[in-house]
Image 1 (cartoon, one colour):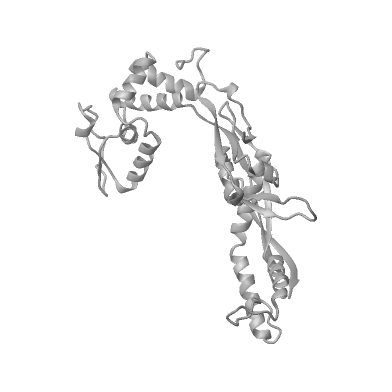
Image 2 (tube, rainbow, N blue to C red; image 1 turned 30 degrees about the horizontal axis):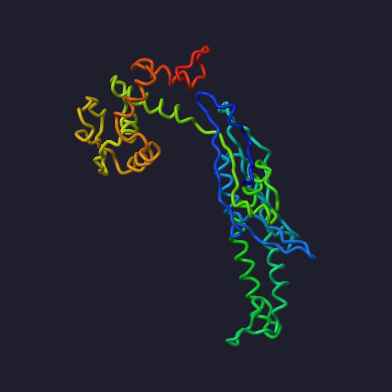
Length: 324
């Protein structure tokens, strides 16, 4: 048993996209415990780290339609005083047909003046109290030393102002995730005992990824490669890398060696990171034999592979998909 929040179902899988379900283990450490009045059991509010994991497991991404507004307070000497920030963020989620579902923007407001006043009011309970070492517990209230009190309060306001954008941006992001997933504000202790949540997202199917890898390699073998294709294929095949700061200029030698170990590919320092990333993404495809085996199992030839990948991208198959 687990808490399930599925936004897609497996039954709609197609040649290009599929639905995957990701479990996230949970414990009380992932939640803030809030005591309720009377004899009611406590409520548990998910921490931001958990909500961020949920967003990733659900395939939620954010659009460029994000903006920040300044919040102004009363005028001082004819000038409006800045007291906070309001951040708007908009999220999107991939549908099974590959299009994006864009959701309404969510906003979060952070007022550093209000937060500063709250901290000062809470600190008043510490006036006159001391720690075991004799230092006062109060941080922002010093009735016997007005100058120290003013400096401490100004410093607190400055700290909150410095963190304002981060707080507002995170708040808006978490609201987007909650709204899309339909995540409850709070959970019960019995729900936490299940120990797991599950979420779904749409991704490129493994078959489609294999087909893309095959198309790149066949493109190289047929002599139609460019420098970028060579680097990508090196990542797919696990070919050795000759890494230097200045890359060799011009089109690389496309003659296929008998063994990839005999053909180091020279790339620049800037390109090195991209290549390592490609190798990681296709770690299951470590050598050419696996690619050849896949091609043969699908009864492809060199010409049909490039056609197939282009057909998938354009969505034009006329009812005849090369992937079965």
